[in-house]
Image (cartoon, rainbow over all chains, first blue to last red):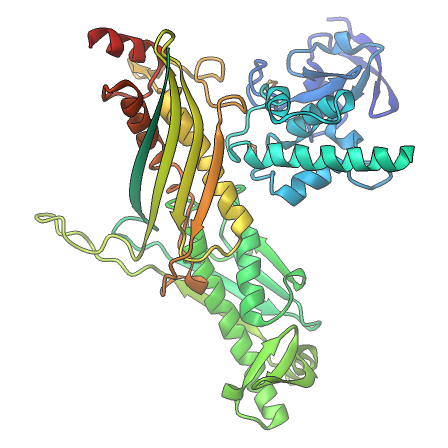
Length: 164
Length: 325
Ligand code: FES
Ligand code: FES
């Protein structure tokens, strides 16, 4: 099959590749770009382990064909720390003990990031809803929800300080 | 109509393999700079055993946890510590690490005793320093270890622990299957919709006797995760096998709880010191899940006045049971 000429931005960096058009975005990220923070759980759009942010929206990268990402902007878990400093969500997850086996964690953090980017004072229900497409077998979600609350309150305090 | 109900369930659960040997081994090596390496076969699958074993080693050695490195589950260098199963790692491998650290500490204190000319029994280690009774000696363990090394003395401790059990009598079933047990009580509050048959778990309060919570945050995490699995077991999850084939092999056909299915879970940690455990600890992994479905089923029975005998309590089953009544 003819290769597909793929141009996209991944974590702020321009990427140019010729790929098999049947590849999923997940495969390009993991197997070609070696961004293995993105996980494959079910491969059928049910678990959210493969979540990435595509143009500001959370998507299951196992359901996105590589050509569909052409000209788009992708953010993976590797792309959210700034200058070597963890994102507030990453810090809050560590602090709250929201990571057990860690398999769901990259997707969870990205799901929560999309939520907080749009709504920095979410209710508990809004948090639960925003991560309900991401399955965690270990934690029972309690500490994940707490972590998102911690990050939200930090962001709110910081924004308050920036505005002052 | 929506009906509320409350249910309670208790459980006890043996820690370790049933009526069988299941030893763990560990090495603790105190290095020249006063830090330590723990070698253990114990696989951390997310429950936090590596953290707990580092805490146990640090506590026993009298050094800071930041100064402990755990090398876990590497068959090239770590001694066997059995499976991460049977809720056994804190109890069994925790004891092995405690014994290995104690053994290494004794080697350091023997040398310190020689150097300071004070009986080893009066010496201890705290924050990397040798103490005499209640007073710091001013001598750091690093200095003692340097002395050991100059004389070619290693400070490598080893420890092994095997829970004391007996085989069960095949006639009477009598014996000692486990060295210790975990106990728990959980209370569930549910709301049952009598028209749709949907059960919503509102709240679970889960009290678990863990002996000693070496890492309370990890223990809570185990309880919360166990309750979530218990909710799945009670309401959603059913393995149907037909002609030797599992009928729901994917995540779209075998549903497990999402953040929208899990209620508020309130863990309560009960610390009933277990003399045979490391610093009094037992285990909590599987116990967290054991009573949940029973508590939920009791709550549904309380709400509807009907007892159900088959899990999961799916809407279809609830409606069928209401209709039969
Ligand atoms: S791997 Fe993509 S949703 Fe599960
Ligand atoms: S931490 Fe294991 S699946 Fe979420």
